[in-house]
Length: 347
Ligand SMILES: [Zn+2]
Ligand SMILES: [Zn+2]
Image (cartoon, rainbow, N blue to C red; front, side, top):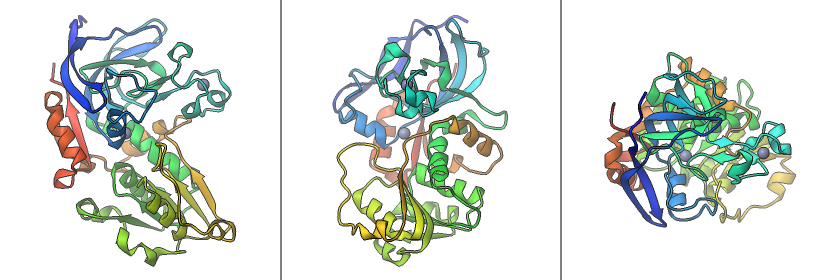
């Protein structure tokens, strides 16, 4: 097919400044596939990128790391057929360092070094808030037939949520507490149920918690969290604050497991916790970063099996052209916004 020479894209021009503009349509390099983007979301991490908190991101930058689309062209060495509907996971490792060889390409020792094959899509290389994006084929997951392109945009997020539960060794019947009623926390709550949790309690505050009341057995306001102290077999935290991390650790029963997944940026300190809670409690307190080992592919299988409903977590849809409105809706949490989804023009 013939590709237009130029395309529309969201561009983070410099710290604190963005625009929607025309830029050259990328061409797939060796090992890459060109994706016609169909659905693309923004998250709090994009706010951090725009604020300049990811040193590896160079401005001007095309963001977008939660997206799906169709393959329209591919570079040498790529066999995926044109027309294939795909979701994208955003960490692509160099493939040869010690961590990559363990499947932990999320911890690649060559982070940010494009010449080694490493790419963090939407972070160190251009992302999917554009009509087209060229990405390494290793980032692609073919979407199951029953998964829509809109739902497929959750490929990365669902993997992040599932990885946290696997880190925490979720067992059937477990009493699970999830901190953070944002998109990833709500995926984790649903997946915990799907994987056999005995009960799921969601901790959060505000409009968003009410909207998703039925996705958990119980919703507890963050102000009332003391009531959960020492009760949970498994606690999963996707709130990203020191208060939430401390409360998460205090909510575990003795011998329980705590997975902290919210604070992926630097600069948040854990304060005000008696160490004996962890030591004498014999707790497993684990960090969980992103979605290694192809976990997003398994998450898509659960999505295909209707074990998790992501459609209802998309509270707003916009054409790509209206990115400024979408951004404001998301960053100000208007109307209980959970995720806003952008759609490049059809064609
Ligand atoms: Zn994100
Ligand atoms: Zn590596």
